[in-house]
Length: 456
Length: 108
Image (tube, rainbow over all chains, first blue to last red; front, side, top):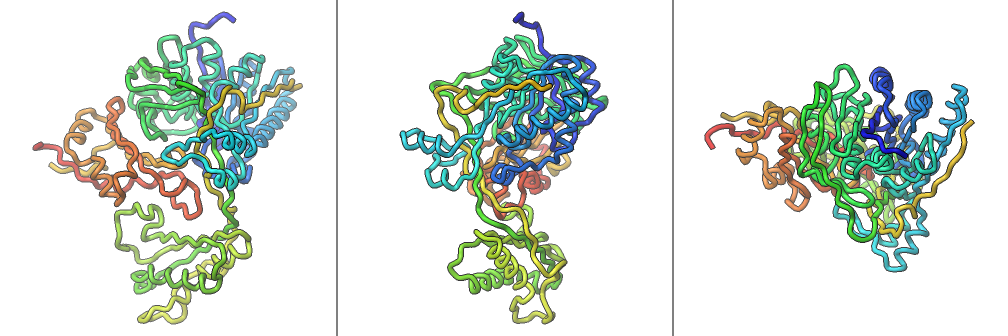
């Protein structure tokens, strides 16, 4: 393969399917004939529920819409299309779902046969149990302690976060379309750039700046396309939407988005050091970045793991309070309601949570305003228990006993709470992020299995 | 002259940084204002901890990021995002207390 002088990659959406890709800027970008169409489709922002229950938060039609744009443009041009973290979580079933969509779309548009390469990212509990029993430490990230066998058993589903390795492998296999399991957002872009022979520092930076699409441009607008160009010396990023520009401020500002520290970004195999990055306004819509460095990991490659475990079934109750005396004493009222749940269900396993909107419903203990300034309160009651029956009962008592609160001087003796409906509502089961850890591996590919098929 | 942060910064935001932390960005359009805010001493790790009523140990990072004219800090969550009892799954409504921070612009 002869190495290109420069490589251009379009990123149409920061999270494919989560909200539909804007078509105008996508086609403006597509007309410039980028070398790759790449997009990330996952996030851990959506909470642990989708991974645990193996479901999507993005609607089927939006996912298909976004895949259709990329497939039409990339197949017409005959260049690769790469999608990572299929279906929000990147589990095996989500990859399969995207395979079906690609198959449907190819049929719909009567496309010539092409090669689809896909890989799975799910990790079995057995694999980790074995490692742990051999004495391998599964280190925690972000101040978490190392993984315990107890936490492992409390987990329902685990995905490994792929680095560039399976993407490079898929391109070596001659992929026209790549559908990836859970992956680092940046790997979806960095993989192709490294495969094409560009240096790791520039390649990972390219991935980092493109992963959220138009979030690196201004004014603020999501789901618009941007194009990144890599050479051996620099990365340039250009906004495709007519009303957006990539400025020094917007690109540098994006470098810190959703990360604890703006100077370092960690991947399976090393980290990007952005301390010496230099940002220049290259043209009106383009910013040029130089000075990034890649630091390979010393010792074994560590692959990030995400795990989610079910905590219980869940119901939600909604309660309004308008009586000023009750509002002043709301903490006592809720203590009463809690005591009534405990009196009814002594020794049972359950959790009861209150959010008091009008007091600190959004910020909880981080709320600096301690006094209640509102003339009315909205209270969300959340009950979690091993069975639906108990979760419902916990939530129902927890809500209804606000109505029956015993306050000595209350004037309204016909009920101290307003209900929209006199019942509680079934909610999705409660899950918890049980794993945000890394596992050391001998071979970066050992957690990912590659598959290929011809779509015709 | 005292001014509120909301009148000086271009962007003040909070957002999840992974599942266990929330990160805060305060970004200024003008370098000059950014430098003055830094010098004012109104935004430090201690002051942020006091504002949010948390121990210093929960602030995992505090960075002055010159390329973006930005001050950035990160708070450890007590429970991972989206756990039962969650109030803000994306962590994106935790910044408003920053808006009213008063900054002394002159006379340092």
